[in-house]
Length: 218
Image 1: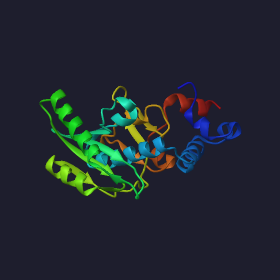
Image 2: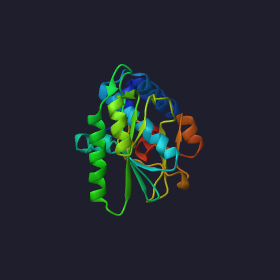
Image 3: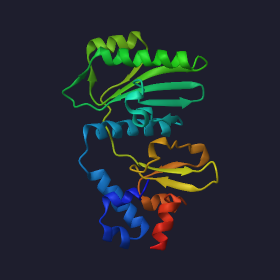
Image 4: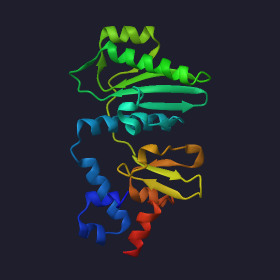
């Protein structure tokens, strides 16, 4: 990152004059309110579903966001013990319906995952904001694909508070930070999600040091 990503959401005077907590919170608020593209809407839904899994104790790889078109139809890979959930997410409007081709795609990529990882037990899970067609539901039952219908994108604490394995630094990541989607939250390591910057900092987490240090210098 050549510059602090927070700068994208603030004027130069705001960035220079505001204390770090207010500055980062204002950027986050503006990011939340901005109109989203279709890709961003899909990304946010994947992040939300990933958050649901992380709160249930899973380690989550955000493969769809990180790898893009090379994700092989695996938006999320959620691991808990020896169990793997290969998750596909569709944030569609209520007037659309999920058809069987999407179930076939998920089933195929689960089989491919099991071929790649023969010692792991994988299952497919399909999340959507809308409904599946009757035929898609029948195929999902036959192919043992778990279906979560009409699960809307909801507000959730989206600041990731991470403890570095290298040096133990407690760093929080905002949703527009470069390493956000590569950061895995592990509750057993006292990592967590926070709703506000003030909350993250009250728990002892700080922004990545290069940004925090620049602010203190200014």
